[in-house]
Structures are given as structure tokens and as C-alpha cells.
View 1: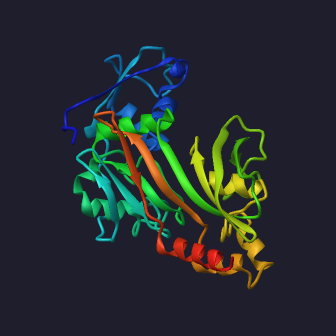
View 2 (view 1 turned 30 degrees about the horizontal axis):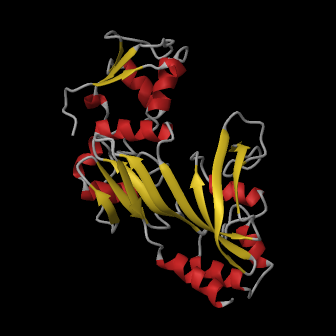
View 3 (view 1 turned 180 degrees about the vertical axis):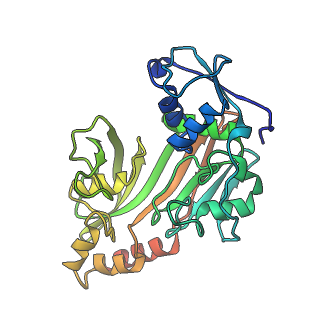
Length: 320
């Protein structure tokens, strides 16, 4: 764990030149809100080239940013003895098998029952790492998605893992059951953004600068459905669900992106029965490979299929 008076150092690369200090730090440390970043700058906890700075300061290549970890407030989220499965762990990070139905971190009125609550019970020191509501959180999975998720256990590990995700040095592979007859293999490379009329949803049908990329191949075919192995190159919110749905292959039991609409038209079919068995979008983060935050060697962690996913597959296989 980083000591109370130690300082994290970061040198601004070419990509950061000309950006405002507060905006650059918010992108560098996504676990902190913009207001938290601004507060840290104004408190003097973040310094540029050894001196004080204002949030609107424009950065130059080579500027050195110093951040004092002790200025980050301790998480207020209460530890809870919730059952979680640990897939891999050392002194720097832990990889959990997130169950479907569990939210990763508190948000809005939700302050209990999350993965963060469970992790704070298992790793009490986690509360001093990163933001108040997302201590140690490097990336997220949707509430109803199961599988591998890595969490940092100290500040240097958090910074290193966030940098690895941002540089796309992390391999993320998923299993998904989709409706229809997708091609044997392929990739999606599309614009991506929030839906203009429904702010809960995302879409590829936008004129956005952000891109969403993934590749896929069919692992197994059934009557009217297919099991897909998906490799994410970007990590946009709902990305796999959106890109497959808008290509005409919504995920089984996906209430937000069209899966359940298909199943209502297929009552009694193997697809509808399998959707009832899984009861949530058929998406599982099966594999995570990332550079160790301190040593740099590759860590490979796999999550077994949960019972609901295996039950859905059994129904589809038995139907022939």
C-alpha cells in the first residue's frame, strides 16, 4: 500500500499536450469524478512541475504531475460479508468471478450489495485506494454480465492497470449466445455513442468520433441461435450487446437490446426456453489477460461458465 506521504509521478505524453489539467486528470484517473479532480487540484494535492496549478491550466509535453495519495478521501461504502469467488490474487491485485445480478460499485441511491461492498470486507485497505465509491475499480461489467474482473489493491497497481487498459494491452474474451445465424467469423468496427432519444441505451448509429471494435467467431450453432466467442478491442458500455443487436443478432434474454422481443415471438421454442433458463443477457466474461501491474509479466485468468449459462446451453443442445 502506498504510504501516506508518498507521491505518484506522471509525465505528460504528446497526446496530453494542450489539454486542460482537470480534463486530462479525469481521463487518467476515471475512478475520480470531475469535481473530485478539481477539489484535489484546488487543495494543492496535485502539482505541476513542482508548483501549484489551476484546473484550466493547459498542459505541455513533459510536464510532470505529482499527486499525493493521502489527499484522496477514504471510501464511505460499508464493507459487507457478501459471497464472492476469487479466481486469482496477489499483493497487488485480485481477479473476481463477478456473479450476474451484482452491480460493480455503488451509484446514486445504491450503496450496498455491490462488488465493492464485498471487496471492502475481504480487503479492508481497499477503501483508501482511488475514489470514494469505486475504490480499486479498474474496469466494469454490466450488472447482468458474469465473469472476470480485476481490481487493484494499491495505488501504483491501480495506475498501472488503468494505463494497460487504456493502451489496449489487456485481452478480454467473452462468450455470448445470440439469436439468428451470424457469419462464422468477423469483426465490428463502428461509431459508438449514447442513443439520442433513450439515454439508457447506446448505439452505433451516431455520428461520433469514438469507435467500438471487436472480433468474433462462432463456437457452436443451434436451431436459430449461436454461441459466440468474442474478443473486445475497446471497452464501451454495453458494446457487445449493442453491436450484435444492431447487426441483427441480439443476445439471448437481453431486455434492453431486443433479445426478449425475439423470444416473445418464439414462445415454446428452444431459444425461448433457454432465455427463461438464463434469465439475463447471455454474456459471460470468460477470459482476462493483463500485464502484472508491478512485474509486467502476463497474468491469465479464466472464469468457468455459471450454472444459468450452462443450463441455457444444455437446453439448446438437447433440442438438436
